[in-house]
Length: 258
Image (cartoon, rainbow, N blue to C red; front, side):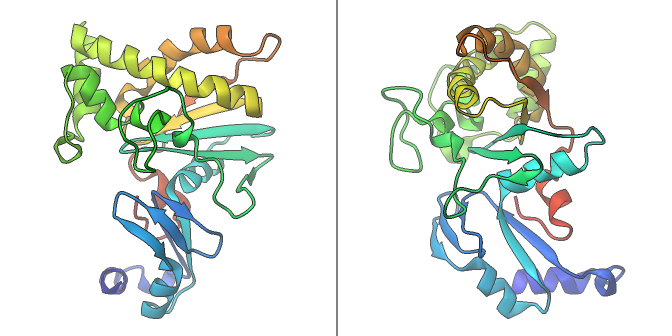
């Protein structure tokens, strides 16, 4: 945690104005800042809030990064938001959040809306949760690279620039790029059908590291989603978050780790 203290100390221009900080992580986080499971870093049962509090003299709020990104989108949007908004943060994983009448739906222990672990297939790549068939394994950066190259890839070899490369390929009619986005959109539709039938959202927002291709994904999801929802239900507004790479930090009001 010395890194956090060092970073704060380096902010000489703003140091006296910082009253609190927020840290976001891509994992299960209890209301009290206790990280239950963070597969990307191999963390389990880590009281991150307490560790940070012991190192700095500032109030600190630890939050799941999809929850923080959802709030970043809602509270930076000049449009009024009422009803139900579902946010999907698609990158290394596929995190989810639900905001109902401007309030975050957390679940009984603050760990709810893990949409990436909806089971959309009978089999598939092994997920970080230990199961197979999870939406996250079909709708993330690694999956996009798998669809674009027609071969499996090691997690460490996943190219973070791939979404921008695929978007550039789409612009010139590259068939590999078209296949990658269409395949990913198809799997995302599977999950969104269940999410839409469960929550009847007014809006579904897509964000995260997949941002360069998300407009193309939305264009390929809207029609199939509308046809497959329970008849009589309204198709939610499908939008792409405009916040960008610092979507979590924007909400956190200080240092963000996404």
